[in-house]
Length: 302
Ligand SMILES: Cc1cc2nc3c(=O)[nH]c(=O)nc-3n(C[C@H](O)[C@H](O)[C@H](O)COP(=O)(O)O)c2cc1C
Image (tube, rainbow, N blue to C red):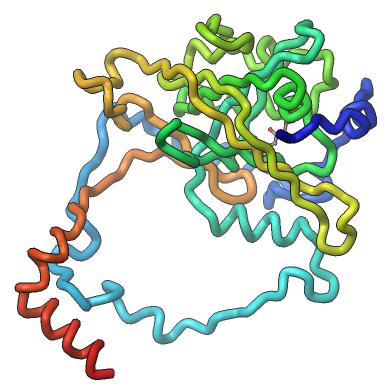
């Protein structure tokens, strides 16, 4: 088990938290307010717009649904090429790895005095039995969420629905360690069953978690500098709103969750369009299909 990095935690214990936004240049607009004024209002989607798949006539071996890829020129990038700082890799990773769900992570400080809340989009399912999530902390300084999690081994994660996105974004403010983001974001802490941190009452899906494992990552150019930490947390309790949960308590309804995804820069979006695509039949059934048989024959003759 990973031991908490006490020195690093103390290093960032300060009243004025650092502002890294200037270096990242995440916002592409010189005057965001002016651009935003010209945009249409956000449309609330109470139901999913379910369409056909992009290519309903796709057959085994058909590959991509169009030939555009043939005229594309691919640019190869060495992540450490001359003049390329880590922020450029961060921007490329986050703009190309889309959509990403957004976790509202809640923790409590080691002394139990401050309840912390912050959004994280490096969040994914990591295992099923036991149910696990991974979250990655990408800042060089150990942020409050990570420091609290390492110290207390407990966290809650609440998913970000569209009615929560402005509050979730504001909870990312680099508030000093003793300032709780719950009130700043205006969200309501709901007491958890098995862990000390509360979860977000306004979120339709929350999980109570215990720390399972920690993996630190170090700068390639200076292996003494920790640059990111990925944690794996085990879900010990699910909380799902009744109207978003199927009768067998196994499936959450995306139309009711109304999740917001994060893309690159300052871009977000709703998950309101969908299509359904059945998995291929078992191979033993498929191999009698003529098209599949000829593809297998082609491959074995190569
Ligand atoms: C939507 C969104 C997603 C974010 N995702 C991450 C992430 O995955 N990893 C990370 O280290 N920081 C992420 N951040 C930045 C943290 O939320 C931010 O650094 C915050 O101040 C950390 O708070 P804390 O010090 O209270 O833990 C994200 C910010 C926003 C607005």
